[in-house]
Length: 64
Image (cartoon, rainbow, N blue to C red; front, side):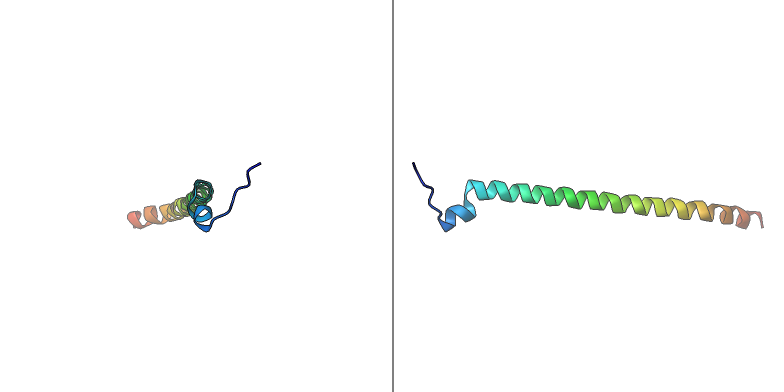
């Protein structure tokens, strides 16, 4: 049976470390994208509400 020896360079720069790091980075990016999307949707909803509320005021201002 072979036992793997743990060398600092292998642990820090090896293929396993790199693969694990890429998985973590991918998960972080997906989480950030989802948060950004949710925030953008909230902004769009707020702008739509603001436009809806201000629409009657625009019509009244034009008729005066």
